[in-house]
Length: 159
Image (cartoon, rainbow, N blue to C red; front, side, top):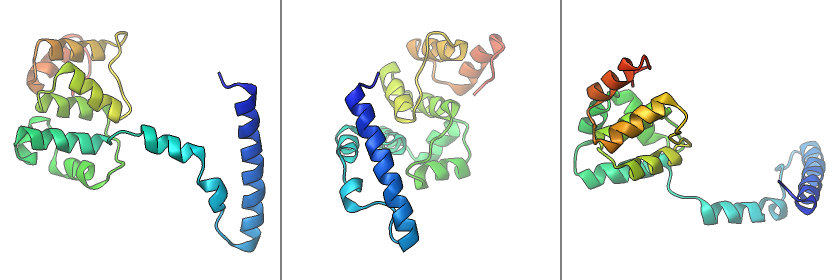
């Protein structure tokens, strides 16, 4: 929970920013002054931000020494979708796509968790789909057809 000081700073920031934006809109100048834009928030993000999903993905692909096509075909993705992942740095694929790519790369449970985290996801112990994926990773079941069969056997949507 945010303390009173942080909430007051947030309130002051929003009010100051709003006033600057109104003033700047009237003058047709940039919305944010340099002083406000270069804040502690940017420093925090720069200090704590890790590699993006696509950066991590291509590090794993390069590490495997396999061509991109073999990885995305094994994951059941088409060239167009994979090209979107490669060419748009901030592209966020679905959880199922991330899982399929992790399986095609035969990543460990920890590596899969890192990849999911980079894409904004995680595996939960309370979700049946996630439990099936965790089971398959633990048992080193990486074949997409086998994983889909396991999902289908529990009446879950396949990858």
